[in-house]
Length: 83
Image: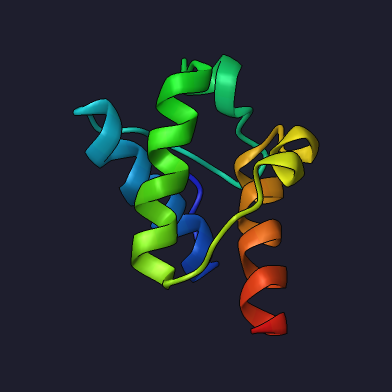
């Protein structure tokens, strides 16, 4: 089991667990749709959960560049750093 040290990746995992109602094992390289079995509706719910946790707004058009947990984590970090 890989130790996750990035706090944003941990928050993505926690948000996924809340939305999916099950535990998930993620790494930054985890593919959101394939590895976590997340569909577009669940992804939007995860994004809303993360927006609440970080008090940010994630533009919908930026989600097209998100494939992995690491991608989503980087997007969140970029938005937070610009705030």
